[in-house]
Image 1 (tube, helix red, strand yellow):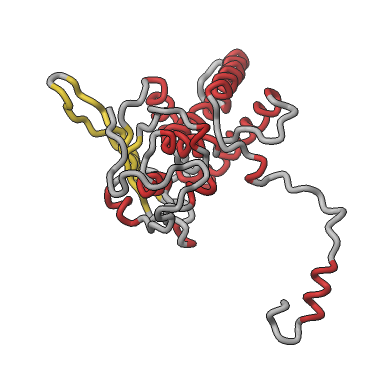
Image 2 (image 1 turned 180 degrees about the vertical axis):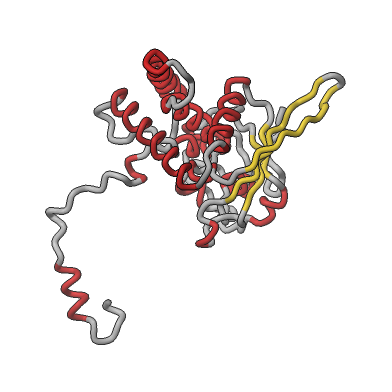
Length: 272
């Protein structure tokens, strides 16, 4: 208002508004933990599996088990680095290639509709992720989560599905860590992938392409830190076309937890 001629008085009125009685925001990114440590994953998965067992005792079927759906949702997010909301509309395909005589590796290919594409903050409308070398546990959780999403009939149903898993996460983490200010969320899995990629020295443009960012700056400043990364867990390959679209604005500047650009223009580490 200060920049609008004749609105100085309104600007002063706005400035004079007191915020003393305003309650603190409860649904902010500041309250979401930007990593998911191995011990936390073990505690979370143990608690969710226990809840799943109680569900089976009461209802006797796998269908409708929110704890199991939540566990698979979290695992899928930690495996792919996708935003939880991006699973609606994602398409999965399987590719097989023989790297050595008699050794066939399955590659999971995900075509992801980028979140935040409408406001110019994403790397195009879609991105392609290739996953290789997954453990059987991660692969099964990923496939189960994908099937669960595909069984939903509408985006509104998916939003309800995601909300129920989010509520289950909130309930479980509150029980596990009642005094913590920042607790893991579904989104923490995305941050953990970023931290893992940084730990593995993945180039910034490749990291941005995997995360679906328009520039190579976002992940260095706002996503999981390298010190929380787990090495040799980057099982994701970016599509070269996605990498080429990343606007390289970070340059040679060194981020606090990422040692500059390394091998820019490559497609990340070799998988296998």
